[in-house]
Image 1 (tube, each protein chain N blue to C red):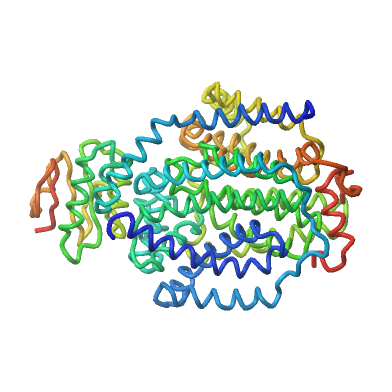
Image 2 (cartoon, rainbow over the protein chains, first blue to last red; image 1 turned 180 degrees about the vertical axis):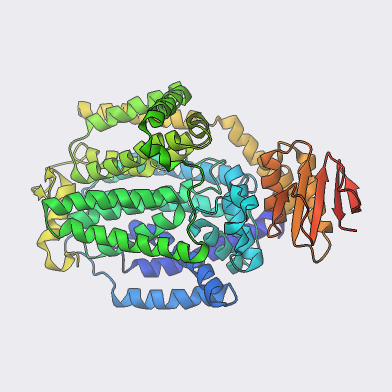
Length: 479
Length: 140
């Protein structure tokens, strides 16, 4: 066996090993009974351990590879077994049996979306400019240097590689290459379809646990699987696909924590904050946005939001501090934040950014936006859905506003990055819209009575009943 | 089926159609054919045939050739090209990593090799090899 097949085999084996470890760790994160969701968190935990193993090896001088990976994996699994979550006494799933036919069709549609993205991702070695100049360059340098050379962060001649970006993705690349024993930037593209699968598993599993019918959860996942602006050859190798997964991890864990669905919600929220902050600066921004939302909840109900805010802030602060230690304080060199103090200059730049965004939006995108608006309107009020959509709106607003601060002119940033970066919000939007549609697709007789949500008013339907049951059951209360 | 469900299904169908039209089936078929034809080739060949080198495939061949011929002890690479394009710097930096690649430094740092493409090698430097419109040279 040679060529791509050999590289794919070893990369797939390494990923399978990491995911198996992650699955064991996820026993402490996700309540038993939600296997798809646990598997998704297993992907996240497994890949996080791979990236952390490279970092550990560099910082203590160990030979990178299996030893540091196992040094992290074994304690993580052991601790996870000690604090494993018990199964819920009462199923939280909408287990009524609708016709199987729609589910089979939707499953086939979903599988087609995964297969199409796998083909796009694996057609050729990862090639996008941002992969070659930023993420791949750092990962390849870490792998061959067996460390993080200071020049990557200090040399002005290498500033095109954005030394200020978080190092999670390059460390994941390096970690996988150490475990596979070689740098193969074609086979490593397999990580991206796997991240897509993890995102879809999480979306499906979380929606099911929050009361969505199987066809609705499958339909949301199938639509997302075909979302080409995110799952395309060009984005393979860049941070958007992993970031979109981290966004969904964060959003779902945030909702669960505020609704106190289970003991694992706090742990999931902390891990999601770590993953967001390690992947991209926007991840840190979304953690901050969630933190503000959690603080708003704290005003409404003392304790609940404050703890969620702490669970968001502390892990993210640790990641930021670790980056400071490794590479010092680095400015966001693409942006001029002093413009914030000069409104006379800023306002025309905001207008330029917005007009460029409108000009760059083609008819298909407008039609898609209209269809999305129809879906939102057809849904019913859902606090969890609202939170997810508000988080996504925060991200969207930031992506629209940031070009106004761009050193290289607002129009340039809009043209080169807006569509790609905004696409990373798609899983959050899919989850938010689907939550609003839960009551629309609830089959048969009404579910058990809904209760008032903690601070956002009433919620109807199965999703609320999940939260209410969790609140009534002492052992599922979040610590 | 309720009217609301029908509206949801119709809007979802519109979204799905838009997503599916984003990349026509013939492009997917071309991808599959390309993958089948290139999968057994060595990694540099697969990159050579891919999108990342499409801006100037001979340039990639030049950089990959230089990578194989770089003398031991070289700690950095100076890159000078007639176009001075960013893609050239990015591709060379990635392909030659972990060696740092610096565009046209003056003076060229010690223990560096010079890659010149479409321009003359640095005066007085020893040319190790010339091919494809470029040259790899080292200090005398």
